[in-house]
Image 1: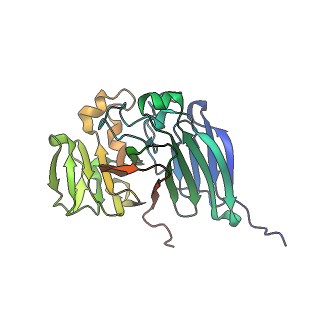
Image 2: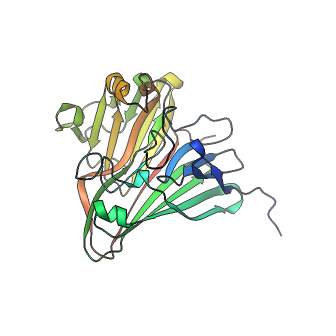
Image 3: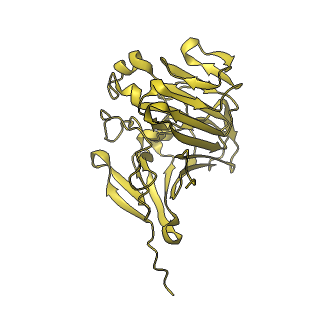
Amino acid sequence: MTDPRPLGTARRVAGPGGLPAVELSLPNGARAVVCLHGAHVVSYVPEAGAEELLYLSPRSEFRRGIAIRGGVPVIFPQFAGLGPLPKHGFARTLEWELADSWSHAPGESAGARLTLRDTPDTRGVWPHAFALHYEVRLTQSALQLALLLENVGDGPLRFTGALHSYLRVADVRQAVVEGLEGVRYIDKTAGRTTVVDEERAVAFDGEVDRIYLDAPSALRVVDSAAAGRTVRVESAGFPDVVVWNPGPEKAAALADLGADEYTKMLCVEAALVGKPRELSPGESWNGSQTIMRGDAGVR
């Protein structure tokens, strides 16, 4: 007998700026959009009537070859400027292939799988053969993002990377990140000194740019300006966490952000930065990040 309950959907749409994208949706109103450009998730709404959980800059450029400011950029094979490649590598500015899309069980989940492979252009700046697979899965309670890297070449490769998640907040000056007390971090605002975080929560009264090493797998963002709304960020396979907000001075210098936009965003990123990972030929690595409302599953 046919199950009468409605299914989720995964359909190709025009994303921001007309970029080719896939929209995932569920009967409860949950929705996510991922662009093929950079495999970039640009939107996540957890249910009908809920607020957008991801920040997307209104000044971002949505065109080929340019990184999108906001959402969830895929950082690979280099984090920031920690190496010879352009900042944050090349994965976020290339066109990915839509390998598959699906909906599972009535209303339970919908997803898309995108793939990026080496090309003559990538080998010109990073001489390795690879296959990078990205699965974006929307469930009734969460957005699940999973990367799988395969070394398909005949020599070892080393990489760093992150899922550079921009979370939307009402006012970052009234937001905190909980779960990092007692964790060592590299403070990029203080000459890359390494210190131990002794505070109960990370607060934002100016620029914050920290790489937390061997960080906990589950963190909580509390946004007091939005009636204490919370967002949970969980990760696996990524040993580190990056917490970033540019503060007013650096935000004003970013053409694709704007002077006051820093108050509306907060980056909490699943990351592999402290110790680059090396894969031998035939080896693979995977890492994931899950974003959900703090009350997900509570009724």
